[in-house]
Image 1 (cartoon, rainbow, N blue to C red):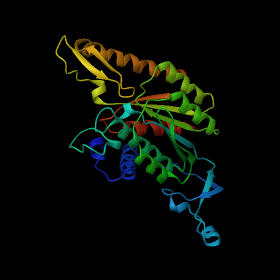
Image 2: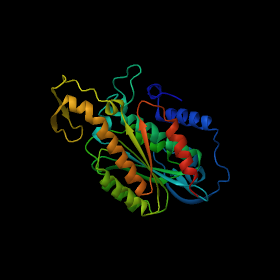
Image 3: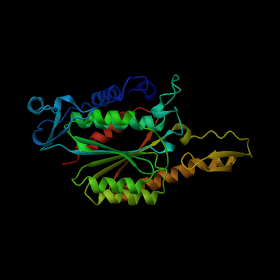
Image 4: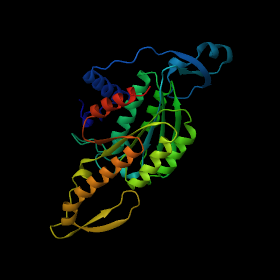
Length: 306
């Protein structure tokens, strides 16, 4: 189990993904699934970040074009990671794009960096399992869409390295985009702090569930969200600013300390109920805890799929 603060010191998301996945697989005594076979599907132009092992060098010699060979496997699964990059995902923990600033000691990473660790690890697992992997990032609009394909793990890592938090979260738009573009059945892994109405979350999940996709929702929270430090005096007010809208409100510090944990628990339970009603698997994660539990749970979830 590698603490997230130590993962932040690794040089790249690829190293993070390998370290996290190898640790989780070793702890679970898990091995890659055998029996994979693949058939050529199509060519596309090579793009920076693509796996060079899939380049057709014979075609390059004939045409002077760098072409990537894409395959369809008999047993491979399509994985699409939906990653929320809204401003609230960078509101706590280490600051900056993917937490590259404030590199101090044992600080936990921001939720966005932790989510990027998780997305990279899921993508790395997909590569090891010969699964086609894709990525959709969004805030109040879809920012990145890479449809699930074999051979683009490095490209996904590159996109994850470029994440920049901003805006709010349009769940309906993101899920509708995924549903309309991912027409073949697969696994959808959504990663977010889920600052949304639970009913809206449930409706968005049902858009994908109705297409036959298997759904898993990773709910990422920071320690300061679970245990907010209200700095106002007892009986006084504290000023809070919404990370996404910028709206400023004043709340009673005593009320915040007393009622906030209850409201957060109610919100989580409502999300869990909506996920269950949509046939989705709900996983709560803390950004200051190792990813092993999430990955082992995902592997069990993934292997239930025929």
